[in-house]
Amino acid sequence: MADDRSASMLELKAIDAPTGHYDVAILGGGLAGLTIAIQLKRERPETRVLVTDKRTEPAPEAAFKVGESSVEIGAYYYREMIGMRDHLERYQQRKLGLRFFMPAGDNSDITKRVEFCTPGHLDAFTHQIDRGRFENELFRRARKAGADAFRGWRVQDVSLGSDTHTILMSQEGEECIATARWVVDASGRANIMRRKLGVGEGVDTGHHCNAAWIRLAGGLDFEDWTDDEEWLGRMPEKGLRIHSTSHLIQPGYWLWLIQLESGPISIGVCADPRFHPWEEISSFDAWMDWMKRNEPQLHAALEDRRADVLDFLRVQDYSYGSTRFFSGADRWTLVGEAGAFLDALYSPGSDFIAFSNTFSCELIERELDGEDVTELADFYNDFYLALFNTTAHLYRDNFQLFGNPQVMVAKFVFDSSTYFSGIGNAWCHGKMRKPEDIRRLGEVLRPAIEMLPRMQELFRDWNAIENTPFEGVSVLPKTLAPYIQAQADMAHPASDDEVFENSRKNVEYLKALAVWIFHRAARNLPDPPDENRGINPLAISLHPERWEADGLYSDDGITLAQALEALPGIEEMDLEKRGAVVAAQA
Ligand SMILES: Cc1cc2nc3c(=O)[nH]c(=O)nc-3n(C[C@H](O)[C@H](O)[C@H](O)COP(=O)(O)OP(=O)(O)OC[C@H]3O[C@@H](n4cnc5c(N)ncnc54)[C@H](O)[C@@H]3O)c2cc1C
Image 1: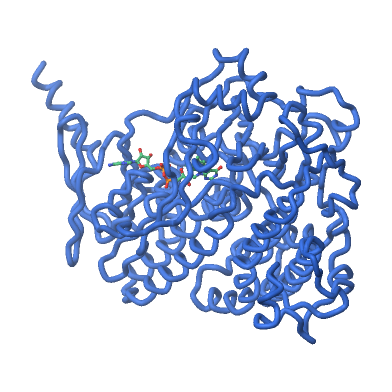
Image 2: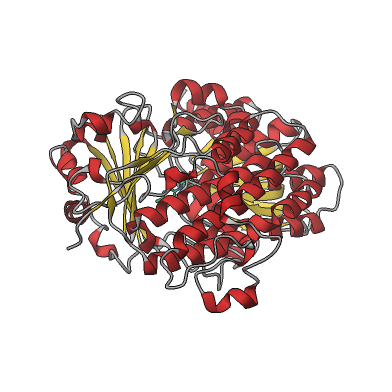
């Protein structure tokens, strides 16, 4: 009897082990690994997919990993391309856009802090996601879709073969082997293949920041910090603000507050160590002391609730990159954090999962159908690197700007408008996958891509010459029609040509916005530019000595009057004109 029982246990173990041959072996079943497993099965059902994660149990709710906020591209990917719309609408939060609170005095009164926020729910959906709840459901759906999804098997090694790759896994001292034609590394920061292949060597993103965060049971609503009716009344109703991904910012750091549908709230800091050393946030007690000095209102709200703190996690120097993400010749790809990570401000993590997973699917599906994808992999590699490097401009050497309300209002509007108008619009219409669409998009977006780094330089230069301590207004770009329209374009159905036409039209909006920001910033120069002359938006800077050589003034350029005409509602962004109070400086 005893022998029989152990035989059937062994049998069960054998069935439960990830052995056999697959078309694709996915290393790691987190967000990226489980979603690409589902995507492959949805797009090419006959594909034999293995996905294995070292974690043995289902994930706990709330206090699990990090990365709870999605923006439009990632949300579209999960909702429409992975089929999670029903789950997201029922079991996760709909997000009320982004919300930022700039510093004011010692930050002891949130109502004084200049607030930049989304006026209300815009047309394109975004969500705040309880990662444990989401990954458990993804695991269930990956299995239901026909993928062999395993828990508790840790990938020990991978050997790449000319025809077939071999994956060695282990569980509690037992080993097993599976083979696969393709390997997709989705192991997150374990970076299995990145390390093995050496594709991260020598890569420096130039962005070196640290993060530490908690999950707090029972949530926390910062509107409870005040009974100022005027401030509360700036939103259509009380209790709405907390549904945004909210940020408290100051020079050198940004702090997130993300309420989860399951009840807890995620609270974390991303800090540049040149302003806020790692030691000041790297233990819970230090983190709380730091909070007391920098965010006293939040500290006061947390101090009495230490018993509600569910976890404390941290990561040092969180940004890294790779030189290669996709190999057609050797049949491997790196997806999600297995390949690279920049920063979590604006929550692009899920966007990069969407891109890397989708390009991987395109390569794998075509190759399994008999196509040589060597060149296509090079194309995607170049494009993905370009996306990554362009996005890096938003963060690198920019954390000092977080102390400057006017510069930050301009930066938020410009950065988010660029995102909506360009890749957001294309992605949400399925026009960022096929090489021919990507090339066409590149042509349309060329001016925006050129402007992006130039504008970040302008923000830094502007911050150096004007840092007025504005207080006391909320900026809701609700009358800035092209901004609202650019967000809506992502959600509204459009023909192929309309998609590109909308992006082209939105690039014109971005040019006008750049010219308006330029004039606003250049007011601070001893000899401001001539508002009646056309400005070439691709040549703007706050360096008058460069203007002539750069071709700033141009007959084809945009005058201030023309920019204002193209930007109805832009006055709302000008804090001085909005009547923001200038606090006395110490
Ligand atoms: C501070 C911070 C804040 C962030 N905030 C956001 C945000 O708001 N929004 C956003 O979109 N993104 C955010 N991100 C990024 C987000 O965390 C990542 O995009 C996301 O977690 C990446 O998912 P992944 O599947 O690539 O990695 P993971 O979710 O880490 O999954 C990797 C999986 O691989 C498994 N694994 C590891 N090694 C092995 C092995 N040897 N064998 C088998 N399995 C293995 C692990 O158990 C894990 O489940 C943030 C990141 C940081 C650092």
